[in-house]
Image 1: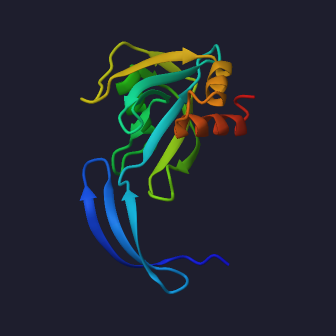
Image 2: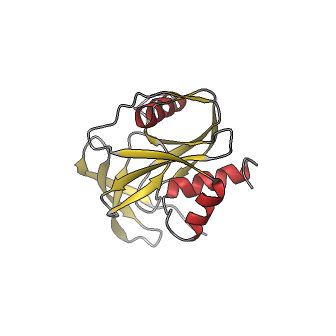
Amino acid sequence: MILPWQLTETRDGFRNRWLHVTLDTVRLPNGASYEYTTIRRDKPGVAVAVLNPAGQLLLEREYRLPVGEVIYQLPGGLADVGEDLTLGMRRELHEETGILAGELRHLGSFWNNPASSDGQCHLFLCRDFQESAATRHDEAEFIAWEWRELSWVKARVADGLIRDRVVLCALAYLWLAGEIA
């Protein structure tokens, strides 16, 4: 039987507007004391799979410093504390792409990396939208976006070009919802 760990102490390690790192002292099931580092997220992540009438998926390209590459990803970001997730998703989609979302359908949520973080991401589907020209990127966002055939996206996952967890989870949720084959 797997037993939960007992949290005995939490100390702040670092905090900024994106995350909060804690140093957690826990008692393990065998009685030993252990220090665990946890990345905490005060804000939930949101992302959206936008599918156009031709069945193409909207993908963004953006440089990501931790992996040192320009990657393919879905539009998204962090909802504000207490903000309705669909409102946060609408805001992020419009800021990054200029697209105004109509109806959004919640596909599901997942933990970003439960071994080191309590962060969650909520995935949405959008088929109802209007394109507009205005975007409002954050100061460190340099984003390009494009429509891609789902067969192309699947092939890029298979060959390792697309490795972003949000894209991979979105494909799984779209498949489970019967939206894609």
